[in-house]
Length: 159
Image (tube, rainbow, N blue to C red; front, side):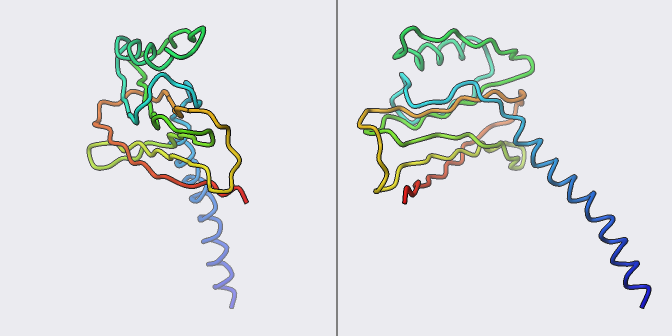
């Protein structure tokens, strides 16, 4: 009878540190995305996804994105030797209550997939009666992989 206790104790002692490693791995992947800008007012009115790996492309996107802002925010300084920018624009919506979230990058063979969630308000939600253009722009360590975009749309239940 003493043997099963020791076996359980050894398995438990090994399982706890291993599970912590798995949690840290997941957290590290999520931490690789740093928010550059997020909101619901953009000069970009159509659904669009961008991967930006150079300053000229960021300048062009930033000018278009901030065209409706007065004064427009300064162009962010990005070290494109080490980082890149990923942007997701939901497109124009007739009310408030919509959001965009780039949550993580997942490996898919020799490519990466950016996981994006579009959230829309449920039928019982109180929303602003204003035209919006939800977006999320993040900075992440530079990678030369092809990046695809996987979009999930969820409805926020306000009850």
